[in-house]
Length: 380
Ligand SMILES: Cc1ncc(COP(=O)(O)O)c(C=O)c1O
Image 1 (spheres, rainbow, N blue to C red):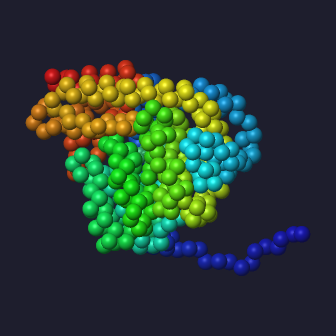
Image 2: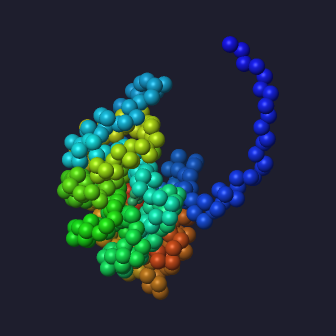
Image 3: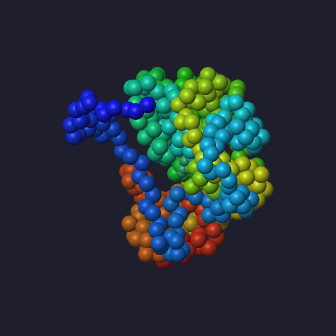
């Protein structure tokens, strides 16, 4: 069959015709701030990146070995992550049917919002916290209500109850442990939130750093099957050292799981990420050793920081420490930042008033933490 010339012509879209509508929908939403690239400095080791809560030990040897032998990259992989979900059931105790795997925890945050929200629906976030909750909520058409945490970053239950009564939000996002401070909400707080008429999305990106069992006891993931209003999100980025391979997963209650599968793009993970995650689950002892080393280093760093009168630190259950530079006790935050930059150390700083004089440092190797401490002793 031959196809004849196309005779009918369509008018071109006038340049910029769609711009006002796009601007109306997205104009007021601030995009995620990507990390600056390390580039050549990072490649030759001159830059110490302690701003993204990465795991400096990286993947397990088994993972690297499996990745070096990847085959059949030209074929679509198991887009429903059947094997991985089966292994995750063994790792977490949550049934495979409740689990959905995604492109990092980030994608699960987005899938949750797109599954549940209608335009104009209210979403609660307990700030300061991970910025993707507000961004994903807004991109899914929701309206975000930010509820400030207390001085010690605890959740104010009364404030949440009032917001639920006044605004009828459909969901609340909670990082547990919270980023940037590392606090873990008490079980009674989570329990009280689960009594409210909304979906509680617990983001447990750092839960594997809690306890001695890679977060098995601390996690709420096995509770998902018992309740209709709890979803739990997890990731391989932190404890398993796979941040760049983008593997996260979520456990959803039955009524929501099916809808979340509809929202999930068909091949949202990739062959390498799936293989790496499966290999990590075969190497739990090795990875747990690294997690314990990072926790020991977190304790040591906290002790070192406590010797500096101008620093206030917050107890952390994650692979990071949040610190406040106390005014008039030594250097101010810009001076600390400048000294870190001169030393080639990148920490995380914040542009919100609440965290204006704070920095967050990811826990790295002992030598890397020594480098941070050396800079801070400059003022002693
Ligand atoms: C609380 C929290 N949730 C989710 C993520 C995203 O992790 P992932 O790399 O799995 O997308 C992060 C990353 O820093 C985080 O801090």
